[in-house]
Length: 65
Image 1 (tube, rainbow, N blue to C red):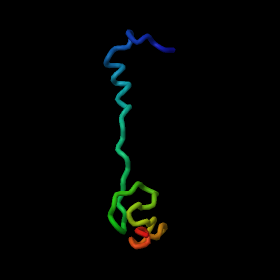
Image 2: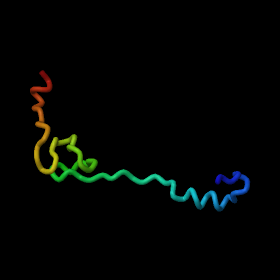
Image 3: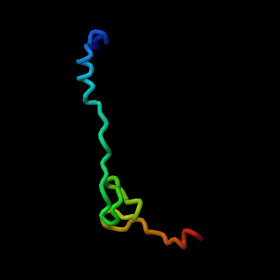
Image 4: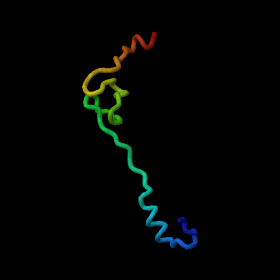
């Protein structure tokens, strides 16, 4: 059953809230280019995943045209 807020001491309330914290996002490095990448994602920089090229890099000539 709920307890009125004024009957809960400041210490008890703060001790309960100590577990409400933000954790840092996990970031790994790409083994091919060394760019920071989220785990289990394709590298945006070089387009590889688990050592295989998933997204083919486009030449700068094709992009300019």
